[in-house]
Image (cartoon, rainbow, N blue to C red):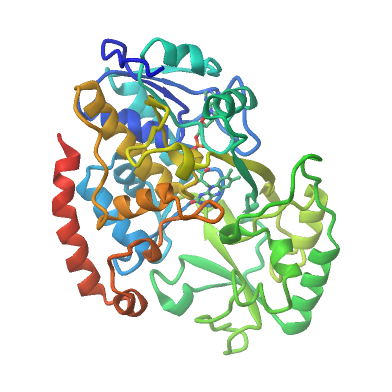
Length: 447
Ligand SMILES: Cc1cc2nc3c(=O)[nH]c(=O)nc-3n(C[C@H](O)[C@H](O)[C@H](O)COP(=O)(O)OP(=O)(O)OC[C@H]3O[C@@H](n4cnc5c(N)ncnc54)[C@H](O)[C@@H]3O)c2cc1C
């Protein structure tokens, strides 16, 4: 039986991650008080390491700001919609070429401050595990607990939705101290000299070094996964040992690609190169780009120490692997982010199966907007299909998926964009078409 929404109760947001914080700030921007529950620091997850809200668990990149790229176009649209976390991210920017790379600690601290300083947001540092009872009160609930949703809540959600949900295995990359990087070998350069010259450091491999490194990865000892699970991986973010396993050239055509780089010692392109990206404004730490891993910690010290120039470097934060849960959105969700059978429940963030930091922020924004509409007695809206947000959401609920897999926003989702324009990335044309769609978004903003 459908329970009537009780607008007198302040909406409850479960999870103080990227999507939950954006949703709370959007509600506050519309003058609506909300309550947000975050389980940390009392209960942690396998990936979060701090107490801060909106913690970035792996890479510190929000990807491209170049409007010719799908992720850049999405950012322009989110700016139109008044996205709060994107504004904060820009205040925490680190050098990163065309990508929006940020100081993760500063970002998390600023988002936490914004939530704590808002008179309209009540932050509770508690684990929430009473979903069915809360929905029975008629309260509007935004579920934003992400891919590492606590077991008890995941169990309740699965029962409520009547299926076991979906999952895949995902990993984080190690972060290293910059002390000990051998600058006689490691050189500064952005690929194709995009962005500032010092935005990235590169560790160049000769062919024999690369082969030895790959052999070590293939023989490296890894942590086991849950005995009852299949080892399902997300193709967009494969562990480095899995890439090594797929063939000799897979790494050097992927995250170790040397194209656009010239080693100053030899004057030529290296055989392969590991890129290092800044982690903080003090330049004390860097992450290994694309090095998600489930190698045992001791093996990470040994094998990543084989990377030319990193022989004496210490790992400050090891890469780790986790089970990553999401709902089968095409079956259970509406394009307004409401759950079909329980329209007072909105699901947002990575739990929807839309992958990546920017998707989490985008859906958090939409959840905030739609929650405010529902509380005002209005119909929740579906973003226009020509907009990036609309394309993403329509992908999410499309019943035609053979198997629903986590996917980040990409041009392929903009079905209205002629194939040729998509392929050639005609910046002006894409921009003109997209801007026409943004006009339609005005109705969505409703501020
Ligand atoms: C290991 C890993 C690495 C990733 N790496 C990247 C990457 O490099 N780039 C990228 O773009 N995306 C990455 N992602 C995907 C995704 O973008 C992030 O997980 C993103 O943080 C998702 O945002 P979210 O708001 O959905 O969830 P989160 O940001 O994870 O926030 C969910 C919050 O809910 C809290 N919570 C959980 N259960 C409860 C409960 N019962 N009660 C109260 N609070 C609870 C958690 O503590 C957490 O703070 C990664 C995901 C994982 C798991």
